[in-house]
Image (cartoon, rainbow, N blue to C red; front, side, top):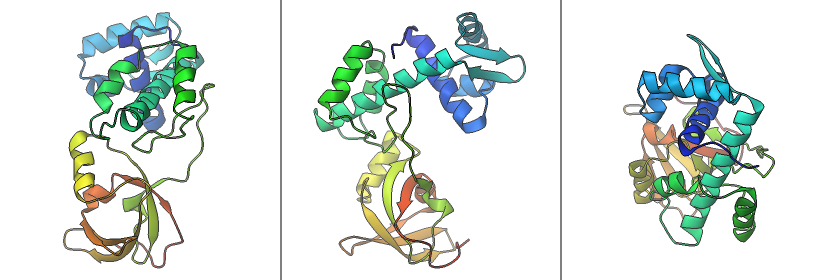
Length: 231
């Protein structure tokens, strides 16, 4: 795949791709909020992307990507996540410090450059935040990740596989709690007063976790729930 859009166009296509996956369509307002753009700027860009046949836009409803627009968006996301792997694994950046660098690096390089980077990194399946990396054909590997807060129950065991929030302050908070991708926990107790949980890690160390944190962790369940979900 080879992106042919400008930096701004690629950013719009990537934003529309993510919003479309979440809501089925990307409204003008949602695009403006995601990109911190004015309504007029969004309207103007959507007009250009429609002329390029990368987007189909319906007034008062929103935008969806055409196959070509989806290809460019997926290619941009692929490069972004590969660069995050490079920055963490090869340059030893922490996972909370790589997003902004990758935002710039994702616009560099053609398809051959990207595939050389992928091969150099050993063809990783996920980025440092646990997000899947699409392959060179734009295909995404399936995964069994679920939002932890939706499935928590006492005695349950799970492995942390990703985060739905890659903001630096949230990632630093996870570091402070010693919550890392690939780490296994078992649920010890639920505290209804504030909705927090107590977990035990593989080494027997307990950690107290808020419901807000649990709602932003993506996990793989290690075994079926032992009791119904606590409210």
